[in-house]
Length: 233
Image 1 (cartoon, rainbow, N blue to C red):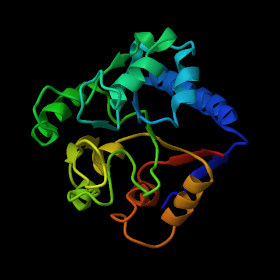
Image 2 (image 1 turned 90 degrees about the horizontal axis):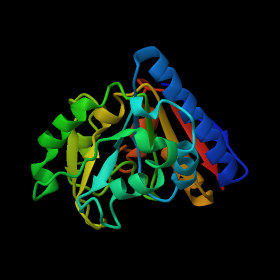
Image 3 (image 1 turned 180 degrees about the horizontal axis):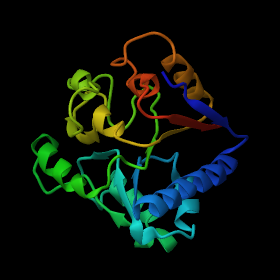
Image 4 (image 1 turned 180 degrees about the vertical axis):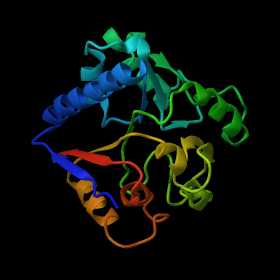
C-alpha cells in the first residue's frame, strides 16, 4: 500500500500557492508527454484559492480538458452546481481556453443518465492526469456518501469505471459521481483539506474500519495511484 504523502501549510494562501504550482507542473508535463492533459476537480469552498491561482497560470490551456469528480443534479446555472462554480472560478482568465465537460445532462433523473454521461466522459483522456478531491466531515469524497444505498458497489474497485447516481438521505439533491474505479483511473490523486476538524477526520480515516463507513478510506488504502494530501488550518 502507498502511504499518502502529506504536505502541511501554515495557511490556505500558502497551500493554494504551492498546490497551484504543483498542478500546473503536472499539466505541463502531461501536455509535453501526450499533447493534452486531463484534470478532474471537485466543488465546494476549499479549492477556490487554488482555482484563482491556476486560472492565472501560463500554460497551454487549450490542451487541457477539465471535468468534475461529482455533480449535484441541478441546472448548470444553479447556485448549487459544481459546474457553475468551476466555470466562474477556474475557467476564466488564461484558463478560459480549457475545454470543460460537465456531468449534468438533460435527462430527467441522475439515475437515468449514468451511461450517457459516462460516454461523454470518453472525450477526457484517461488515465486522468490529476484528480483533485475534497473530503466531508463524514469521510465522503466526490459524492460517495457513507449513507448512500449504492455505496458498496460505488467503492468496488474491481467494477468498471463509471458514473454512478448517488442518493443519500442527509444530502440535498441527487448526485452523479465518478465511482472509485473511475477516480483511480488516474496518474495522481490530490486530497485537499482545510481546518482542524478535517485533519481529525483524515486521521480517523487511517484507522481500521469499513471503507463504506468513511469512503475516503477507499482512496487512501489503495496502492494503484499515488495520493498527496495538502492541508492547511
